[in-house]
Image (cartoon, rainbow, N blue to C red; front, side, top):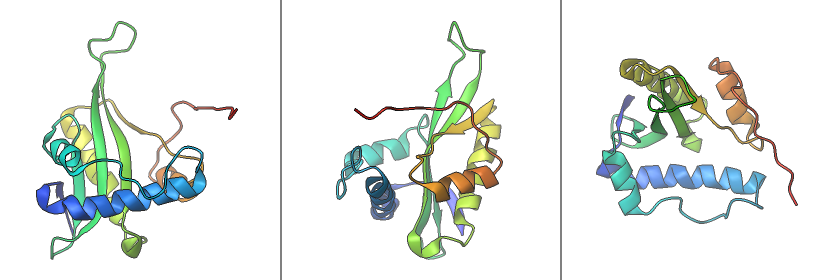
Amino acid sequence: MEIRRATSRDLAGVHSLLSQVLEVHAAGRPDIFRSGTRKYTDEELLALFEDDAHPVFVAVDDDGAVLGHAFCEVQDYRASNSWQPIVSLYIDDICVDEAHRGCHVATALYQHVIAFARELGCHNVTLNVWECNPGARAFYDAMGMTPLKTCLEQVL
């Protein structure tokens, strides 16, 4: 398995993974997520693949098939009046293809993102996890992540 920045040849595989993530979220929160839709157009994904402020990493097998992805965002708080002058790496999404879950692909992706953040000199790595996805929460807990803040809601 190789982990690298996503390129145009990864487009179909990444779309497939994004669909899998969407269906998990739509099943857990149909009041928020619409099943069967796309998060990004091809053009939007290709632009993200080229954007150093929003790096997208893929785990691929020897044949180049996409096994998993990690969408990230570099968040620079050095110009903020109220924050300490830090750079943070936000993980927007990690997904592993259903057929390859339990094969340590997510762990390898997560460790790659952590190493990337260290190379950038980031203060921390953050992410949000949906409460309707307890498997993801358990994974991030196992990776050593701890709560930074809590987002609460009251559905009306």
